[in-house]
Amino acid sequence: MTAHTEPDLAGRAHTTRVVVIGGGIAGLTAAWECARIGMPVTLVEARGRIGGDIETAELDGIRIDLAAEAFSVSARPLGALIDELGLHDAVEPAADGSIAVAVPASSTSAAGGPLRLVTLPANRSGIPANTWATPVRQLVGTAGVWRAYLDRLRPPLTIGRERRLGALVRTRMGPRVRDRLVAPITVGTYGVDPDDIDVDLAVPGLSAALTRVGSLAGAVAQLLPEPSEAASARARRAMLRGGLSRLVEALAERLLVLDADIRVDARATGFSPTGDGWLVTLAGEGEEADADAGAEPLVADIVVLATDAATTAHLLAPHGVQLDTPSTCVRDVVTLVMDATPTASPARAATVYPVPGTMAAASVIDATAAWASVATAAGAGRRVLRVTLDLTDQATDPVETAASEVQRMWPELGAVRAAAHRRVILSPPASMVGHAERIAAARARISAVPGIVAVGEWLAGGGVAGVVSDAVNELERVRHDVLWGRS
Image 1 (spheres, rainbow, N blue to C red):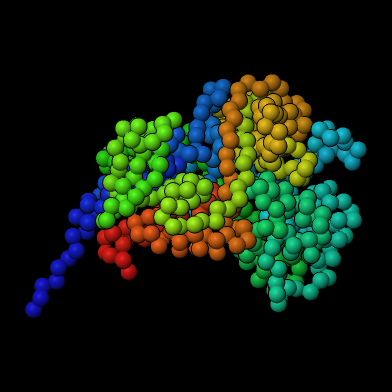
Image 2: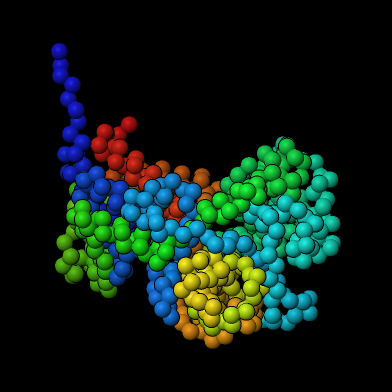
């Protein structure tokens, strides 16, 4: 009788060397998922700090995130990570989740003139549950409301249902609802036209509800939470008191406790096969090559590419992997602390999306309305605003432009007390038409190279919660292969 031999799981983990290229939240999560089971991990980041788009700074005495800020607590992997890192008590649900659309104050308003904010009624992705609601009329006019009402007279979609959100809304409710309620949200959030958004991914269950109910407005009404559940739904959007950098710092601290090697100002220039693994070459900041820099190459059994799509494609090209990199949207994010009178706009939305073409701003988040802790820190005489700009003229001063844009909405705002500017790259969202198919094809090509794994926003489809979930899922597969062998 042959004795059953248990696999040496700890030994396999301790002899599997991992190099993670990229120190954003995807790379940090991937490094943690490996280090926590005993794998030796080295993380390299080309910039002088880790965290990627997660960065917290003190502006006029207020700690505030400068780019990535909110996250969905309904995503289990992120919630579990926050709990594991001891940050559960720092989670702060949104104080206000309302959304407004910015339109010119009047039909005769000159370009650059004052704006009017219209808070959206109950909706899903901008599609109203009640087309007769006053805000809908304010945005689309009487003729637009009557056109939207025709939605109830059209037959339900049962065969060949429309996949694209913009086309569905235009067909059912008319172009003005699409352009003035739906487009502001998709363009403002993702830089994507609603015609490029998949209905079933953006609003799960909408197509089925439309078939049952027979109207788009009725379908949205069915999907809305009950009034008693509204507060709970809003609470699924949260931040960390003190900033999302606390998540980065906690991950880095845990990694260092587990003897992980974290290197900043270290750019990976490529990797080459060694027969049983990989050799990752490095160059320091501004240095031409590894040989000149004197940086010792890193030996790895697994290389995790936690970089943007273009960098990932560049690193994989020498290994015969050709990736179709997605188009991206570059935006300037300006965080402002501004003087405000105590009586300034008492009824204001936490997030404002302008009708596309109305402003240089794609979105404005009033952090003092969205988050109770920020409001407390700011007091009655200050407002904290995050303005995301679509700047076509690179000579434009982002801070001056952002301040001018918010004063069009809130003329009572005073001088800028402090400001920070960051440039970010938005990857296509997971709800974009064809995203799942493109990512499946990319990962199939990447997996053809043994020992190479890719994670990041361009694969996950954006958002801190989505990026963490994707990294956890990918590294779970890697851990399984290492410990138990490929299935």
